[in-house]
Length: 494
Image (cartoon, rainbow, N blue to C red; front, side, top):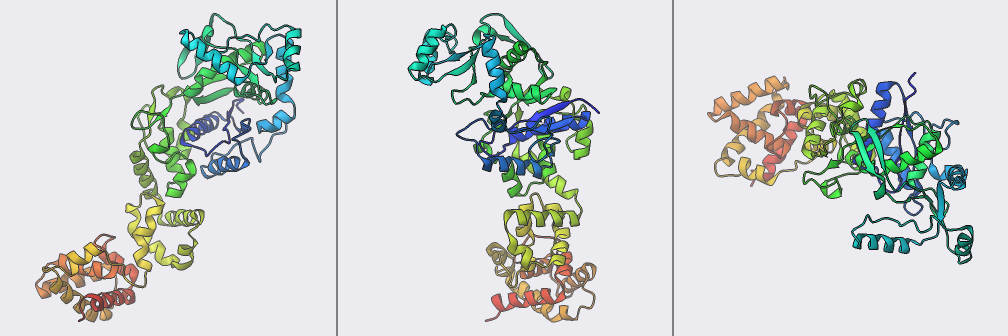
C-alpha cells in the first residue's frame, strides 16, 4: 500500500465552487492512481463566515460527485481525528506549537491593531517599499510587552521571517520557484482570539496528518514560502508541493458568478451529470499525450498524473461542458437516463411529474428523444406532450401548418381522413403507419410532407420532435385518434 496521503481542505464560508472541486478532483485522482489516501479536512477558522450549513453543502457536493474520502467527517481515523480545525483548536493543538515557537524566539506577540498595520503598509507603499508589517513588536522587551497588556492590548502571534536571502520551492508542476525573503513580512500565525491563522493551521495539520503531497491552485503559491519556513524551524519533513493553474472565464478574468454557475450543486440543479462535470474539470489543467477528451472515471484513475498538469491558466467553456454532458447522456442506456431523470426530479423537488406521468410511457418517450437530451432539465419540455390530456399547440406551428392559406384545406383533409381511417388501422407500428401516411398522400395527390406535418402538429402541437411514426406508435391508436379529433374540433369545425 502506498504511503501517499493528500488532502482537500475547503473553508465552509460559501458553496463549493468549480475551482475547489477541480482541486478536490486532482487530489482524489492522484490518490486513486497511486493507491494512497484522500483526506477531507474542514478549515473552519473563519469565525465570522464559517457555518455548519456550508459544511453540509460541501459534503453534499462531494457525495454527489462521488469523490469519496478515505478519512474525514463521518469517516474518522482516530490517529488523525478531529478533521475540523475549530475542534482541533479546542484541543489546544495549535496553541502548543505556537507557544513552542515563541519560547524558541522564532515567533513573538504583536500588539499592533489592524488599523495601525494598515497605516504601516500605506506608508511603505507611499515610500515605494513592499507594503508589509514593519516588525516594530519584534524586539519589545518583557517590560514593554507587559505595559501593552496593561493598556488592554490583545496580542496576535507573528512568525519571524528572515529579512534577506531567498526561499526556493521545487514545485512538481512549475519546477524551481524562488521567493525574495525581503518582500515577505512577519505574518500572523495566531489571532488575538486564539484561533490559528491559515498559514499556520494548515502546516500543523498537514504535518500531524502526515500529508505527503499538497496539490492546490496557484493562488496559494504566495503562501508557500511562509509555510516552508514553519516546517523548517520546527524540523518537520515538508510535503511535496504542486500548484495547478487557475481557471479563468472566456474574458480572461478569474472565474466568478458572472461567467455562469460556479457552485457545483447549481450544475446538479441544471441537470448536468456528475461524470460529465468531472470529465470536463479534469481537462482544465491536465491532458494526456494523445489529447483524449472523453473519459470514464475509471480511465481517469488509471491515467491521471501530476506531471501532465500544465502551468497556463485554463479557460472555462460552458459550451464544451454542455456538449460533453450531451455525449455522456447519449452513452447511457434509456433505462439509465430514466433513473438519472427520476433522481434529478427528486433532487429538484418536482414530485408532480413522478406522480402523474406513466412510467412505461416515459421510458418509451425517452428512447425517442435520447439523442436530443443535453441536460436532464431538457427532458420535461421534450416529452411533456406525451402526457397532456389536451394538445398544447405552439402558435407558429398552427399558423404555418394548419391555418395558412396554403395549408388549411390540405390539413383539414388529412386530419379528417385520418380520424376516419386510423381507428381501423390494425397494425399501429411505425412501419405500418408510415405506409398509411404515404398511401394517403398518393391517393389524394398531395405531398407526403403535408400529411406528415399536419398529423404531427395535430397530435403534439409542435413542428419538431421525435420521428412522427415512432411517436404515434408510442402514443398508441386511441390517444392519436383522440388528439386528431381535438384538433379538428378546435380549428376546422364551424
